[in-house]
View 1 (cartoon, each protein chain N blue to C red):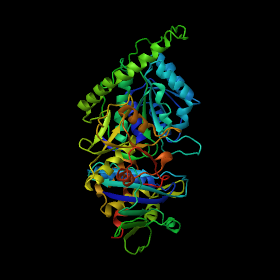
View 2 (view 1 turned 180 degrees about the vertical axis):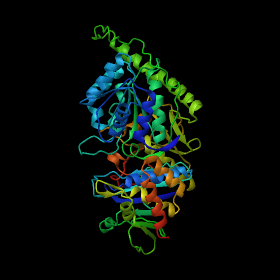
View 3 (view 1 turned 45 degrees about the horizontal axis):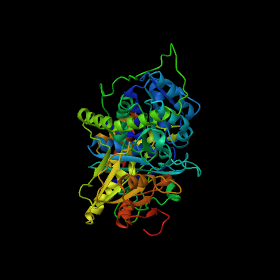
View 4 (view 1 turned 60 degrees about the vertical axis):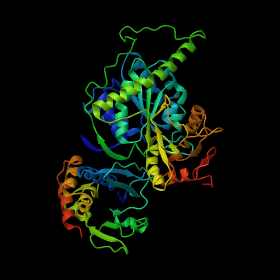
Length: 175
Length: 370
């Protein structure tokens, strides 16, 4: 089983990113569950959501405590949240960032999702949309196939700018 | 078609396939998504249903009762305080033998103000005469909703059905969902004696001591007859759509020495604990009652039982543990866990089994001896 924890702020689309990732895994022929952690969240507060991907049906409902991959959609949450908490030894960290980030003992990758969203004018209520480009980055990381990422995005959004943003993130993500 | 869906959306989609004549509802967290989605279907013209946005849950059930008396197929959804507020009318729906189908998204009752999963809301409706079922996956929520209309409206049953799903844990999780084309799986509703709204008539509703017990006895007969209707419906569902359900789901329980019994998502996650315990050499299994009323006939003879309750009857104990002790005249290790959304993992469930003390009660997170 592959377990992903997504850190974002309320309103940035972390829950939708989790749903898109699960949907893409489904297209890959896998089983997947996605769940937000519902606390006293509100717009702008740090929130987490979870995705599990496996070859067999998933029977676990409790939260992910030792993720294989941590996704940080908003690097500023790292000022108050230990995003590495529980991350497996040698696990991976992806950060939405224009420049590389170092995490001792972990494999780090980055892409400027915010810049990509702004370039495609993917902005809702003043906030850049990060949930579709991040799926492109996760496809580059091999979590889902690029074709499944595109298919999952098209199922949820008719606006092709979302697909273009995911493709841009796929191209621009650091190895 | 396979897609990703939440538990709430799955229920709403299944309700749309059943094409109820009337949906009357009042929103409440974490259920609101169900009735909002149905309202969207109606507003978009996808579903020809009279949607009544009432001012309270007492009224939503009253509206379902009124429509039901006229022979309509009805649906509502609620949770927690909404269900408690409805309580007078839930008794009426069952006593009037009306096949209302309701989704109840299990949530704790205040105080403290808590929106997370607990089974106490539905357990407090245990004795009203509703059929009660707990589901454990998004797919099961969808499939069970379809089956609920057929079971409830069967002339051998004519009792309302409450489909319970764990608040947030199941209502908001996203899992794969295979949708179906129901065809004639749910036959048209034909109540035996509907009131004609054009010529409304009734007779005195005062029922004296010479007759009331007969109505109560007939409710119990219908509850017992429902077991065969449930089995037949589940078998036909499996024939048509390929997914098998039964009154209780057993997992590696046949040759088990110790069996975990739990409702809903805890009962499903217990299967992961069972695999871990088996790898350690402990012959564990799990039994997840789906139906709670009518209570299923479980094969528990000779097993040590670890029963997890996400509810409590103050002054006595966990209600599921109580049902099993009294029905099977056996002792159990009664675990009280997951109240108010308390996190309970498969590791925790495995530990309940390893440290079980048959005959005792254990409050997870409070008692210090496990």
